[in-house]
Image (tube, rainbow, N blue to C red):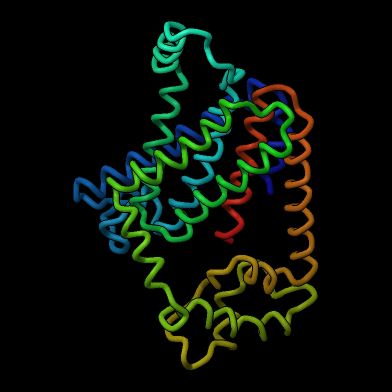
Length: 300
C-alpha cells in the first residue's frame, strides 16, 4: 500500500513514468539473465545460497519458480507497453529502397535492443516451466491486444504487427528452443486427483465462514488453518495458494470488497486511458497495465 501510494504521488511526469518503466524492464532482465544462467550452467544458486528446491528450472533470486514467472510477466507487460509507445504511424514506405532503409534503421534503433530484452525475459519465463505463468502471459497478451485494438482510436498496423510477432516468435521459435514442450507436458499431467491445493481450498471455506465479516487478521492463515485442516491433507500449509481465498479469510468480506473495488477502479481507469489518451507513452503504459492486470489475476 505504501509503494502504491508513493507511486501515485511521485510518478507524476512523463519522464518519471518512463524511468520507472525502464527500471522494471532492467530488473526483469537481470532476473531473467540470472535465472537462465544458473539453470543452463548447472550452478543452481538462488539468492547467495545453493538451491534446494526447483532445481533444473529458472527461479532467479526467488525460491519459487512461480514467483519469478509472476515477476517476469509484469516486467514483460511494461516492456511491451514501452515498445508500443515507440512505434511509428504504421504507414508502409512507398519504395523498396525506403523499406530497406527503414528496416536497417529499426535494427539499429533502441527499439531493437528493447525487443531483445523482451526475448530474453520470455526465454526465462519458459525455463521456469510455470504452467500458470506461461499460460497467463500468452493468453493475456491476446486479451489485452484485442482490448487495445477495440478501444484505441489510434491503433495502427504497426501495433498489430508487433502483437502478432510477439505471439508467433515467442511461442513457436523461442519456446521451441527453450522447453515450451515441458510446460505443455505439465499442463497435460495436471489433474484434480494429483493436486492437493484444491482440497486446501475446500477446507478453507469453513474457516472463511467463521470469520466472514472482519477476518482472522492479516498473516494469521498459517496459525488458524490447522484447526480446519482435514486428515487427507498432509503437511504444514502456511498459505492457501489461492490469494483470493486467503485474503478473504484474513480480512473478511470488508477487506475483500475493498480489494475488489480497487481492482475494478484500476481496470476502469486503464481502459479509459486506452480510449482517450493521445500521447504514445500514455497509451503504451496503459496497454502494459492492462496486460499485467490480465496476467496477474490468475496468479492470485
